[in-house]
Image 1 (spheres, rainbow, N blue to C red):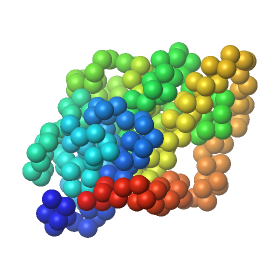
Image 2 (cartoon, rainbow, N blue to C red):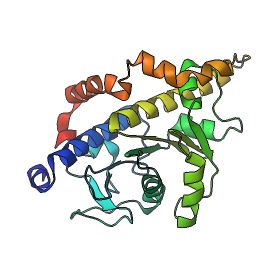
Image 3 (cartoon, rainbow, N blue to C red):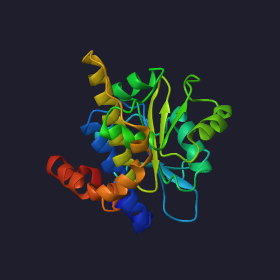
Image 4 (cartoon, helix red, strand yellow):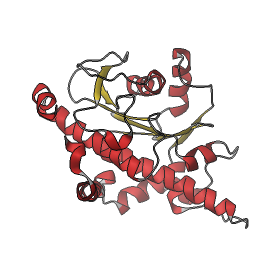
Amino acid sequence: MQDSVRQLVSPEEWEQRVALAAAYRLVALHRWDDLVFTHLSARVPGPEHHFLINPYGMTFDEVTASSLVKVDLQGRKMMPSAYEINPAGFTIHSAIHAAREDAQCVFHVHSANGVAVSAQEAGVLPISQQSIFVLASLGYHGYEGVALRDDEKPRLVADLGGKQFLMLRNHGLLTVAGNVANAFQALYTFERTCEIQVKAQAGGGKLVGIHPEIVATAIQQSREVTRGAGGALAWPALLRRLDRIDASYKN
């Protein structure tokens, strides 16, 4: 199957497929997946508005470059696949891809820590170094049930606005970025922020907050600490880790 799909797509699409499949494997490795019920999507390079998303029924640790399903903004398959896609998942992803040209990648998970914080009225608290990067570009979207209705799309898009992070109340975490590496780095930071918050609250002591002026400079600090590389700084090392464990995501 690898050879047949690779022969049918451009080199740029194949590269995107491999990167997105790697992201699925990394989410599984960190145990942020939820059986088959969440999604990472990426736009296919080129003039068409086509997107890659996971086959509905595969666990994240099974996803490969060839198995990703290519769809248009209406969720119609653009290449043959034995699998369908999750309609609820693509409601969220298609809305953001359509509204944000810069949102080449949209990552969404139901991690336990993320859902736990999404259910807290105050949301993300400025109590960790990780949290300042999230708070600098964070929106919230209220829960409206399983995302099956098109009429939710405008509200979802409005709540995200131009931000990179979106907390879906009572639901989970979502990040957007221009490439897979940056989307994964953002998701890692978001999830770690929530994990630290839940553990800090469980300690029972009074929490020490970070001053808003420090939060306001977080984006600049992020550029400095990564030397402008963003998610690309750690991405090659993450791929090496995957290759040591199981390189079949490249198939």
